[in-house]
Amino acid sequence: MAKKDDRPVDAGLVALRGKSEQEAIEFWKQRFGMIAAIPVDTARVGALTPQLRELVRIDDLAERKRLTTARIKAFTQLPADQQDRIMKTRQAAYAIDRGVLEEDQKLVDELLPTIPEAKSYPQQRPSA
Image (cartoon, rainbow, N blue to C red; front, side, top):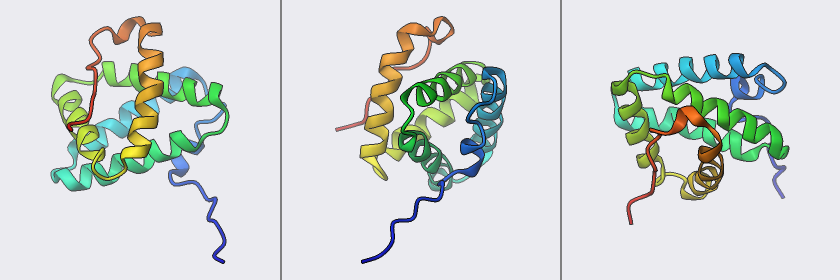
């Protein structure tokens, strides 16, 4: 039987554990900016999906909520064109790893009402 690989899918995200909220927000703003700048749709999906996988793998629910909250706050601070690209990329990622995206969306739905600056955050639902 093959040994399960427990290495992090995204070492940058793993390094955020224990960092301040502002450091986490800045991390996500930088990551989102880099992802939005990728010119090919499939490559953007390939860049975003491992980060969401890593978030879903975090066993410590409080830490996962903290990092997801920082992600949402960072998203709200992006320029509109970057927000649009990231949301389209997230939608496309459902076709790649629906389970991860659904798990992440459950937490996003739980957190959104608790984040005042996220009032304009789009409600993301996968296409049928």
